[in-house]
Image (tube, rainbow, N blue to C red; front, side, top):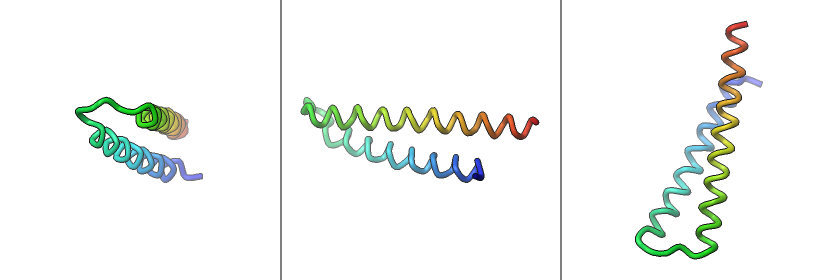
Length: 68
């Protein structure tokens, strides 16, 4: 698999996840969130964090390959 292409795909997926979360945050701004809304935001946070880890892992791998 082409690491650069995969990282690009992951970055695009992360950007979409962030935009979805941002939209949910905007919808709930200025009021108390329901349990369901907070759970959705928590899942979105977890997805973004997981993508960050995966992106970092692939970038690290690509750097190692380039240095080898």
